[in-house]
Structures are given as structure tokens and as C-alpha cells.
Length: 271
Image 1 (cartoon, rainbow, N blue to C red):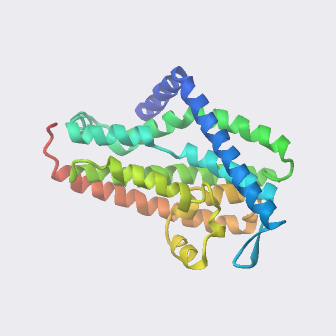
Image 2 (cartoon, rainbow, N blue to C red):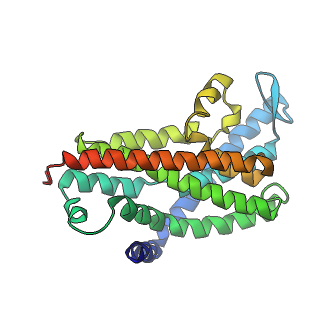
């Protein structure tokens, strides 16, 4: 475990060297929030909504609640992103650079998980400070109790791990296909919509929700944000987090199976 902690520490140092990336990420969040604010403000004002409704049924989002929900969703979405790590993993498989992991006593899965966490660590610090600031701007709308903070942290950790497992599974397709970066890009763009990062999944039609509930998607963004905003009560946390843990186990097993199958047919030379 010490070697993996060393990888995490090295990535923290590297992240601190590229502080401009955090400023760009912060600008992306604030600009995205500004755009969402303008769009939803127009929707509420033009229709004289006090609470957003879907198919004539009130779902409980006032304008401020919706903006707070979207703000938190964008932050969680940024923390679980893996554009850099997944691209590096795909390149290693294509060029035969994965050989160095095969001849050393190190897990390819855990190594890149630490890389994934380390790369996003600096964002985590900045965004947490931004969350504290947001608590004063919209008092009483997020983290209404200490338990909600604990629930948010646990569900956020689940979200990060689930997201990494999904990325790892997609990356492993590089063992069979020449180019899989398009799959990762399509996944990232799709998750902007269906994970609730820009539109809460509670606003989706029932037939779409019935499908999403059988996937890990609700635990990527919606669960952490719903706990932080009080939409998921403490009595529901145990069942929701337990299902999230179950998905972690399932995706971990799938990740190792696909990786083992890919390694058996891996020819160990680059292009």
C-alpha cells in the first residue's frame, strides 16, 4: 500500500505545479452556472413558475433550489472526470507501454486509480472552499446538518470510485480496438445530460427514470447532490449508499475480468 500512497503523493505534487488547470476548471464551473442561471431564469419568468413542474406535476424545485442543485452537480461532475487519466491509459495499451506494469509487482488498476485521485486532488481542495462560500450565499440550502456533510462525503467517494471503474472498463476495450478515445468522449458528453449534471434526473420522464434506476448513473452525481441539498432523507441513506456499494463491487469485478481477458490476448508491442 505504501507504493500506491507514494503515487498519490507524487500526483499531488504534480497537480500543484499546474495550478492554472484549476483556474480553468473554476472558470468552467462558474461560466456553466451562469449559462444555466440565464436559461432557467428565462424559463421561470416566461411561464411565471414558482416551482418547476414536469407534466403538470410539481417536483419541488424552486428557482434557488434548482440553481444550488445544478451548482453542486457541476462540481461533483468535475471531481469524477478522467479525461487525462483515461487518455494516458489508452495510449499505454496502444503503444505497448503497459509492459512495465506486467513485469513489476504493481496493480495496473490501483496504480491508475491513485493517478486518477491525485490528478483531481487540487480541484477537490478548491471546490470544497467554493462550497463553503456557497453555504453563506445560500444559507440553509446545503448541508443542513453535520450528518448531511458525512453522507455527502461518503456518497462522493462512491461516485469517484464508480466513475473510475466505468472509465477503466472503457479503457480496457483498447486491447481489442485500435481507438477507443471516441467512446470515452461520447461517455463524458452523455453523462453531462443523463447523470443530472445540468438537468436533475428527477425532471426526466418516468419511462427514462425507470431505466436509469437500474444503472449506476444515479450514484454518480444525483445521490451526493441530493444528500447535500436534503432531497434524500437520512432514513434513505443506508439503502441508497448500500446499492452504490453493490455497484462498486460489481464494476470492480467486471473491471478485473475484462482486464484479465485483455492481458491474455495482449501482444506486448507498440505501434
